[in-house]
Image 1: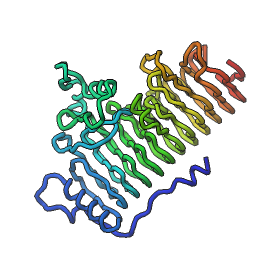
Image 2: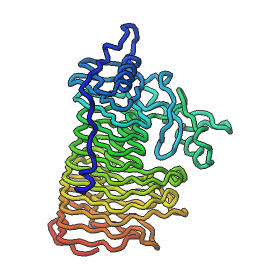
Image 3: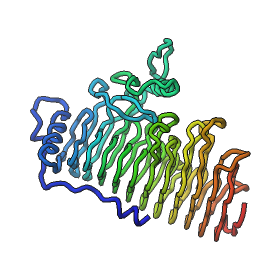
Image 4: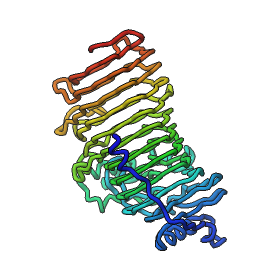
Amino acid sequence: MEKVYNQISPPTFPDKTYVITDYYNGKDSLYTDAINRAIEACSSQGGGTVLVPDGEFLTAPIRLKSNVNLHLSNSTILKFTTDYNLFETVLTRIEGIDCHNISPLIYAYGENNIAITGKGKLDGQASTDNWFAEQRIRGIKSENGETVNEKTLLYQMKEDSIPVKERIFEKANGIRPQFINLYKCKNILLEGFTINRSPFWLIHPLLSENVTIKGVKMQSHGPNNDGCDPESCENVLIEDCDFDTGDDCIAIKSGRDEDGRYWNIPCKNIIVRECRMKDGHAGVAIGSEITGGCHNVWVENCQMDSPELDRIIRIKSNPMRGGNVENVFVRNITVGECKQSILGIEQKYWHVDEGPYLPLFENIHLENITSKKSQYVLHLDGFDDKSQIRNIYLKDCSFEGVEKPEINKVTGAENIRFENVTVNGEPFHEM
C-alpha cells in the first residue's frame, strides 16, 4: 500500500486568484456565466484559484478546466438550479452505461490539475418536491410508444447495442445527473467542502488518474446517493472523509455489461483511510457495475456505525456483468453496529443467476475488525456448484452482538480461514 500511497500526489496551483464576483455583470439572476468566465480566464492564463467568496450564489452546472482550483470560502453556499432547461448535454456514464446526458452539476472532461477546495458548501437542491425525485415515475415515450423511465430506456439502448452517440437524454428527458463528474482527468484534488442534496451520485471520478479526496463531508440521502464512486480509475486516495448517504458510502466500479467489456479498464489501487461512515447500503462497496474488474483496494483505520448501515464491506455483481475482484485488504475498522453483515458478497445481484460471465472474487483479507452488533459476520452468496469466491482470510477480529445462530451464511465459497477470531466472546476457528 505504501508504494501506491506515495504515487498519489495532489496538484498545486500558481499563486493567482480570480474572484467570481469580478466577472459578474450585475444583471444575471444566476452566477453561471461569472463562474465559467473566471474559470476560463484562470485556465487560459496559466492557472490559479477561482475564489467563490462568502455568500450564497445560485448557478447552473459549471465546467472545470485545467490548472484551476475552485475554492469555496468558509461561509460559501454554491447552490445549483433545478431548471433542466439550463443543463447542457455532455458525454458521461450512468450506472456503468455510456451516454449523453444533462450535465453533472460540476463537470470536467479531459482536464489536468483540477481541484475543488475550501470549507464551503455545495448544495444540489434535489428534494422530493422537484423533478430530481419526480423523474423516477415521470418517464418518457420509447419507440414503441410505451412510457418508460429514462434509466430503463438507457438500459434497453445498451441491450440493443444502440451507439453511444444516439443515447441522448437532454432537458426534460434527462436522467438525474451526478453532482461532480470528472471524466478522463488527471491530478485531481477534492478537499474540505460539504456536499448535500445531490440528484444522483455525489462524487464520480471516471477513467481518471491520481485522485485525492480528503476531508470532504458527504451528507445526502436522496435516491442513488452514493457518496463517492471511482469508476475505472487508477491511484485514488479517499481520506478523512465523512459519509452519511442514501446508498453506498463508497462504491468502486468499472463499467457495466458490454459497455464495461468494450473499455475493459479496471479500477485499481484505491486507498480508503481514516474515514467515518454512518447511513448507507455499505461502508465500502465494490460493484455492482464492476465488469472491467477491480484490483488492489486498501481500507484501513475507519469508523463505521449506524443501524441504517447495511454492510461494512460489500462486493456485488452477477453473471451478466462479470468482473474479477482481487486483493482487497481491510484492517483496523471499528464498527459500532450495522444492519446485516461485516462482509457481504453477492454474485447473483438483482436475482440474476445465469449468464456467460461469472464474476470471480478472491484474496479478501480482514484484519483487526471489531464490531458490537450485526446479523452475520459473513454473508457470501455465490454459485452452489462453482467456487467463484476464494481465499477469504480473517485475522485478529472480535465480533460481538452477532444475532443469527448461524454466524456465517455462505454459498459457493472456498478456502475461508480464521486466525484469532472471536464471535460473541467465543473463539471461532472454522466454518
